[in-house]
Image 1: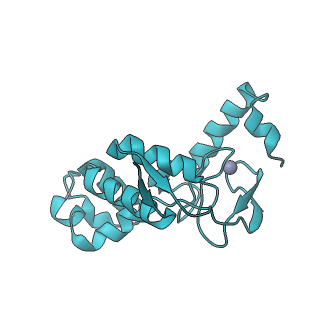
Image 2: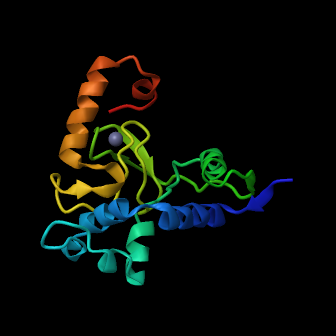
Image 3: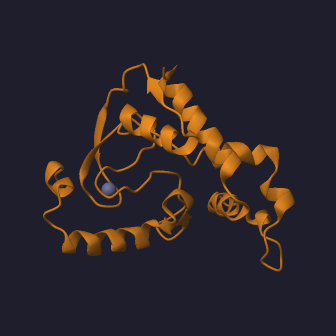
Length: 168
Ligand SMILES: [Zn+2]
């Protein structure tokens, strides 16, 4: 028998896993991306005391957002991968309510209300960024670099189905 979870519980389980398993460097980079310069010491080593503060947990799990474009099947597979258990998500996926151009690849993609999301074309994960050149932890890159990188992959692989399902 599989454990039955609703979507919200499944997402919470994934976030909890991330919170408990990310290493100091991964957590430090997320917090840096959120503008917390105090996580780095003057000698550029990580400031553990700051990184592991309880109040930072919210910022860390906040990096893992699963919007309407993330399917229940994907969440089930992710939990299996992380926890080595089978689960079944029992509720419906949220409705997609808004279509907008991706700030990274320019394709028209769907967004759930004001929730942040992952672009299904270029996989840019939406999260707060100060500007195009600031580091985005969930994307391990700045928007500017990510876009350039996507463009070069795109040019080499223009027949990819992903680029045909969506339009600019
Ligand atoms: Zn995109």
